[in-house]
Image (cartoon, rainbow, N blue to C red; front, side, top):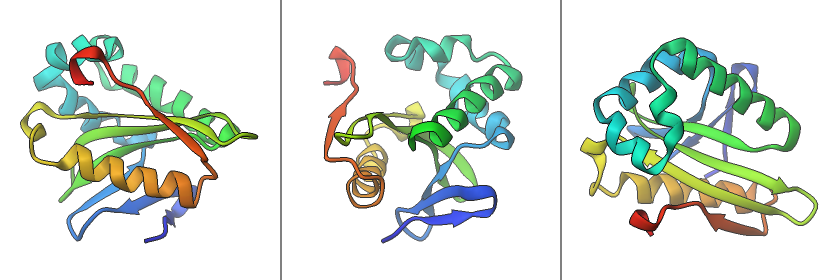
Length: 147
């Protein structure tokens, strides 16, 4: 299952008929914020960045930085989309392109915990990383509570 590229070079990775990973874009800010808001306190325990996301403008700033990182080294930050709703985020951060070293991480809306969504999204992201992004060694970014 290869990645498809949407207009403007946006990477899209199919998980199943209803679910995909889609590279984040500025236009996704409101949907991402809507995913974070109901569970901000829970998410911020693991990733403090989420506590700073109070408005779509806050999210847009990070999305712009993620896009720049994608352009510079091929890192990928993607929303987990199902039937038009953003249910989480995944990241593939390439930190050594020469040696193929990268790290992955994910966040899912609290209502999606325990549904295998994070597992399936991570599995698809790993496939992309090894088969298409040139990664040879990938580390998982996690917190002690999630390890």
